[in-house]
Amino acid sequence: MLNVHHLELFYYVARHGGISPAVRAMPYGIQQPAVSGQILKLEESIGARLFHRRPFALTPAGERLFAFISPFFGNLADVSGELRGQAAQRLRLAASAAVLDDHVPGLLRELRAGAPRLSLTLREANQAAAENLLLRGEIDLAVTEIDAVPAGGLQSLVLARLPLVLWVCEESPHRQARALLAASAEGKETGPLIALPPHETLTRRFQDGLRRLGATWEAALEVPSLDLVDTYVAEGFGTGLGLAVPGRTPRAGLRALPLGAGFPPVVVAALWAGRLAPLPAAFLDLVKARAALLRQGG
Image 1 (cartoon, rainbow, N blue to C red):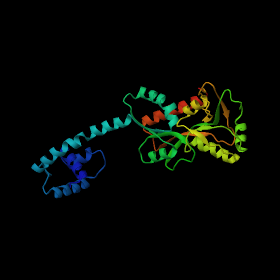
Image 2 (cartoon, rainbow, N blue to C red):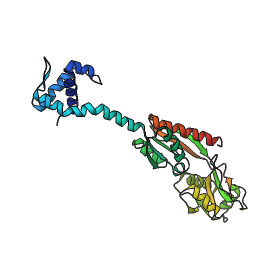
Image 3 (cartoon, rainbow, N blue to C red):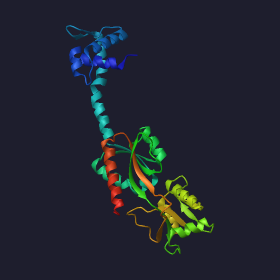
Image 4 (cartoon, rainbow, N blue to C red):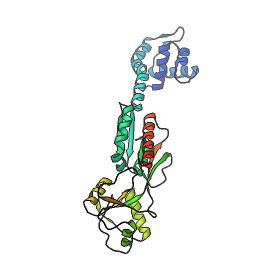
């Protein structure tokens, strides 16, 4: 099989009429003796002389080979530019379910206003899955809850720290979370708990806090989203585990009981590897602006 690099060198020699002008025209540095040596290897592979040196002229074999490779190397710059243009309009994003539901659609709408040819890939991912995708180069950026130091080679930016709360109906006699937790620690009936699945960061933080108190309170209703937690609490099915999100108006008929000390907040962060391309960087700027607005109660 012919060496593609040797073919590229021959293309420049044939196009520019000799080795010396080809060396000056090449987009990367290479010395004239190196070009001469590699052209000789190409001729040995083919078994035919490709051009006369002085004066320069392609042989019939050289003309045939140049006609064959010229469309490929001649159009390579245009194809490369087209692909760079496509990459410039591409965003590959991973995020937690809550972020995808509550924030990503609006942020993407803003991004698309400045990038109408946006090519989008969305993946739902927790921290571990997002880090794997980043390290494999399958996504550009992740926005998700984190509960461990990010993997080496990744950059991170904390966007929000969201306190844990218990949601109860307005008519509930409970006014403080500690009363419910104390009842749980004493083995008293606390009613059904409505929460996200056990692998979710929010649920794990809550269960860790309960263990420190010597209490147990397993979820009787596991639901896939915080919106459904609110729905089932409002319908009177139990007490919900949720987050105090700045700027988010509680569902009508619900009251939040902050859990406070002993239950660390859920940390939401952006993760990425290396230097961000312009479009993912622009999206990260929108994320940071949204996070700042939420922290201000907007």
